[in-house]
Every structure is written in C-alpha cells, then in structure tokens.
Amino acid sequence: MKSQSVILIVDDQSQNVDLLDAYLVPQGYEIVKAANGEEALEKLSGNEIDLILLDVMMPGMDGFEVTRRVRLDNCNRQVPIVLVTSLRDVEDRVKGIESGCDDFLSKPFDKIELLARVQSLLKVKAYNDLVNNYRKELELEVTSKIEEKNKLVSKLRESEQVLRASEEKYRSLVENINDVLYMLDTQGNITYISPAVERFTKYKVGDLTGKPFAPIIHPDDLAGLLGRFNRLVSGEIEPWEFRVLDKDGSILFVRSSSRPIYKDGQITGFTSLMIDITDRKLAEEALRKSEAQYRLLAEHTTDVLRLLDMNLKTTYLSPSAEKLRGFTLQEMVEMPLDRQLTPESLRTAYAVFSEEIPKVESDPGYDPIFTRDLEYYCKDGTTIWTESKFSLIRDENGKPVSILAEARDISERKQAEEKLAKSYESLKKTLNDAIDTMVKIVETRDPYTSGHQQKVADLATAIAREMKLEDTRIDQLRMAAIIHDIGKMYVPSDILSKPGKLADIELSLIRTHAQNGYDIVKGMDFPGAVAETVLQHHERLDGSGYPNQLKSEDTLLEAKILAVADVVEAMSSHRPYRPALGIDKALEEISKNKGKLYDPDVADACLELFSSGRFEFKPV
Image 1 (tube, rainbow, N blue to C red):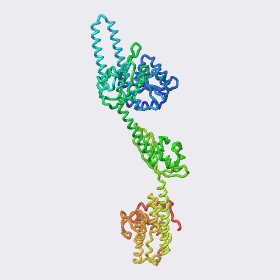
Image 2 (image 1 turned 90 degrees about the horizontal axis):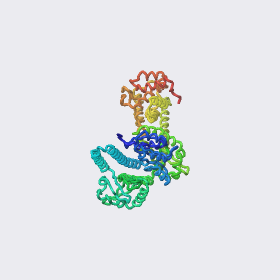
Image 3 (image 1 turned 30 degrees about the vertical axis):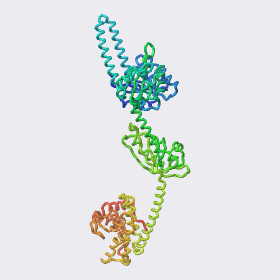
Image 4 (image 1 turned 60 degrees about the vertical axis):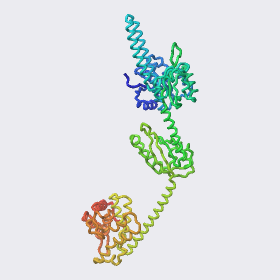
C-alpha cells in the first residue's frame, strides 16, 4: 500500500518543475516528472499516479491533447488533472474543461493556492476511489451470488454482512474526515452534510440537512456562487472560494470543489468537499496590511532604500532617491551601476559584492551586513556621497534572493572631513616647521653635530620599518628622533663644542638634555609617546642609562630604537673631543652589547640593514 500520494508534474520548463517540486515534496508528496506529453503518457502507464499538474503550452503534444488521451485511458481516466497555464482567455479555459481537466492553476504559482488545490483534489479523488472500490466489490459480490445460486441464501447473508461492514467503514470515514463532505440536489438543497461541519462551525447537521444551501452564503458572494452553481449544472467543474455565515453571524472563508452525480445519463445532484481556509485568508489579509505599512514607511523615509536581485539589478527604489539625485525612479531603475557610481565607488561596490556573494551562496548561515561610503552621480552633473549599508534577504528555504541597500546622504560629513584633512595637513606643516626651527636652534648652538638628528631619524625610521611597526608609530618615532637633542639648548655652547675629555660636572650638564628635552616637548601637544621617547633615548637595558636608570621592561620600544640609532650615528661621526670611529666600530658596539645595553631585536634589525646594504647614512 502506498504511504504517500504521487503527483506527476509535466512541464518542458525545468525551473517550473523544480519550483513545484520544492513546494510539494516538503508536504510529503512523491513527485514523478515529465518534460513533454509523450513522456507524461509513458510515466502514467508505468506508475500509480494520484494527481497530474500539466502545463498547457508544450512543444509537440500540448496539455489539452494529453488531457483528452488520459480521459480515454480506462486505467487513469479518474486521475484529477490540473492545467497549469498563463492563459487567461475564457476560450482556453473552456477548451481545457472540454478536454476533461478538473482545475486550473495560473502562473506564476501561489504556494498557498497550489497546496490547497492539490489537497482538495486528492481528497475528492480519495473519496471517489473509495466509492469506485466499493462499487467494484459490490459488482463482484453480485456476480458471485448469480454464479452460486445454490448457495444464494447463505451467500446473501454473508454479502449483507460484508455490505454492512463496508457501509459502516465508509460512513466512519466520511463522518470523521476534517473537511466537510456535503451533497446537493439540482435545486441547491443540502441532502447530506458530514458531521465535520460541527467542528469548525456552530451549525449542527440537523440545522442544515434538507435546507437550501444559499442562505448560509455571505450576501456579497451569493450572486457569484449562484452563477458557478448554474455552470456546474451545465457540466463545468471549477473549485471556488467564498464566505460562509456561521450560525452566530460570524464569517468563515471556505474553498469548495464539486462533481456532478449522474443517473441514467442525467445529473441528479452534486457531491462536494468544503475546506476551511479562514486562517489562510486572515493571514493573507494581515500580510497585505503589513506590506502596505512597510511600503508607506519606505516611500516616506528620507534615506534611500533599494532592492537588488542577486545579479545586482535594481528591482525597487524608494521615492526619496528622486529628491536626492534628481533622476526619475524609472531612470535610476533602468540605469546600469557604471552610470550611477563614480569609477572609484563602482570598484569599491564590485569588490565587496564579488567577495561577499559567493560566501552567501555557499553558506546558508552567513548573513553579512557591510557599510561603504559610495559617491553617486546626480542629474545636474554633481555628485553626492552616501553611507550605504547592504544586507541580505533570503526566502523561506534560506536561499538568497535579494540585497537590501540603505543609503544616507553624508555629503556634508564628507565636506567636513575634507576641511578637517586640510586643517590637519596645515597643522602638520606648522608642526614640522616648528620642529625644523628647533633643530636649527640646536645645530646653531652645536655646529659639530649638524645633521646628527636628521641622520638618527633616518636610521631609526628604517629600523622601525624593518621591525614592521605601524605607520603611526613610525611617524611619531621620526618626530622624536628629529628633536631628540632639543634639550641641549639648556647646555652651554662652550661645553657642547669643547675639545678633549669632559669633566664630570660638564658631563652631568650634558646628560640633563634628555630631561630638558622632555620638559620642552611635553608642553607642545605632540602626538603619542614623542615626549617619553625623547626622555628615554639614553636609557639602557641593564639600567645603566640616564636620566632615570630604567630597565628594559620599563622603556618604550621607540626609545630603544632611538638609542641604537643615536649610538650608531654618533660613533660613526666626528666629535670635538674625538675623531670619527667609523661605521664598523659603531656596529661592533651594537653587536657586542646586544641584549645587555641594547634591545636584541632592535640591534638585529639595525645590523641586518647595514649588512644587506639596504641602508647607509646620506650627507645632510
């Protein structure tokens, strides 16, 4: 025995087949597929099919011809057929009815309508199959009684028992199904209605049996329903949806499918199945109101809302875009991205999409939200800057279907940023001019060390890059190196230029330049750790430096770099109290005391620069 209903989908368009498959399989239906009429007839003969969803317009044999052939097939003539079509003409629908179809389903598909119609037809088929099986059993029983007339009495009793059991089974099935089974005569009077009516209405079976069907129909639906009933009498089979007035006056939404009952070739009544669709209708109405509210919100927001499909084609644009850019909505929807964004912003957008969309399509759990500043063209030839936020929209199956872009005008912010950048550059120039002035003051008072601070700055910067420090730290280190001896302004010039060995008191005065330099710089609002680097550039790892005898863990990395650069430049240059020792002696000093006086990483970076030939002091 089959555990689930089997539906044959016939369509030459694979995307339509896949869509129907995606809707029906999760509902527990088994799907058989055919790409044309000939294949459909082959599949029908080789499978036990419960329902056919049949496309009308197909190459070769169309849906009308397939329907006629199925109705001529004794084995499958009772299989319900739903013609799936985008045709709207009455002639086409009449042609479908004449060929023997049971229902129509219009493209594009509505999932709720599809499932409701499939469920309704399958239930009617199940009921008809039950009746047919019962009829066949009865015919076999009668034949058996004729053939065994010698056992007529006993067989008759046995047959009556079987009949009663079968009727009881049939009655139990009919009276316990959730949907309402009812029968009408040709005058529209209810001749039978199943007890299920009492489960979703306040009517009792006795309230309706023998009464006209029309009075329980909503007045606004009555005229249309009577017209459908008249067409049903003339042989047209078509499901319909309408409103029913409950016993207390409340409104219920139902969907009903009917078939004529024939006797001697004449219609004597109708059997119908009625399904309660009130919850679905209320949900549809709530969705409609919700969509209207969101549309109202989207159309009155000052920000621009844009929907893009997964090919980056605009499918919706809020009216605020017209005020922002001057183009009409139609112009902007049809305009390609390369005419909407400036070249740099276009590259930015494509870079983001080319990186993010593959991740989105491969990972159902990945829902990025990313923001970029993009520059758009306006109709008057100007441009505006927007802060554009992009987020993903997936369907109920988790498949990405569109991208929501929210754009806010930030032109004023961009102008402010440009002014701020210019102001920063101006301040930076002023600061550099001040630094140059301080360097010149020091060099004027100590002409023998002219260019020392610049050379130290060059080497310190090169070491910092070798160690891969951030650009901001390198810039601040260069500032500190350029002015690291600014404190010598407080040291008498005759001591600075004195030849020969310095006395202890003179040496002590010179050593005050680190603290003096810090005192000068700290009040000048230099960025970061410039002042601290100036203060610590004569500290050593073992605590033997000055002015505070700091050890390695208490000393800034920038100060450790500046210390090595200062020693290398000073030893390799001439001084009043000694001739130049040369670069080799300077590097020997760094290598010898690496890890004792000088940071080992800094020392290694310095030695590597010189040994590789990637650095040498340039004349200043």
